[in-house]
Image 1 (cartoon, rainbow, N blue to C red):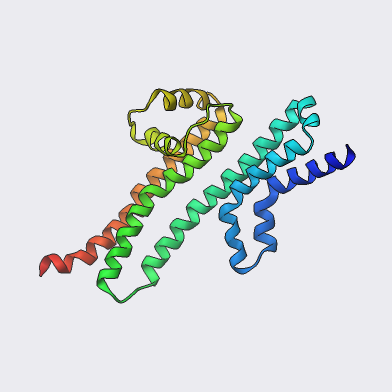
Image 2: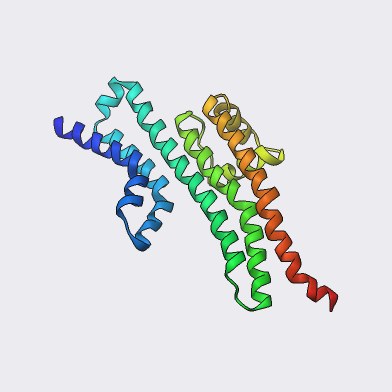
Length: 210
């Protein structure tokens, strides 16, 4: 029992602080594991629970603290990935040229689609994570992505997604998350997409004039 409690405690800490460990101790290409850390964090939290379920069943609040801490940490990592991907994309557009007009247009078109979709894909994962601690009904990955888009663009939703929304949006943490989602997605649309679109228009202008 002592070994189980120690193992569970170590796994819990690892689940919460895995991103910090990756950033501080992994070098070079191994830092790319940061992009997968949210999924590993959730997996480690589940393993920590099953390593010593008696403790978490007896002290229910500790179980919730574990999962809330892990999902908060994983959400912060996803926010970090979202912001840094935008910065890296803009740097590539500004400072890296292929010296090929066709490739430049294709690359800008790719970034245009990428920046339209990436905020909602990231928040779809975050909503799915928070749905776990909200005891919401499990939904498919596609439904989670559609749910993320529907919050911003008022798309019609099925009964399953509507029930899911009514459950998870009752929590204050999800309401705050929704506000952040709106701000970030609109910032991407106004700033990032406008920048990429303007560069794309600059590249297609010569063709139109010819």
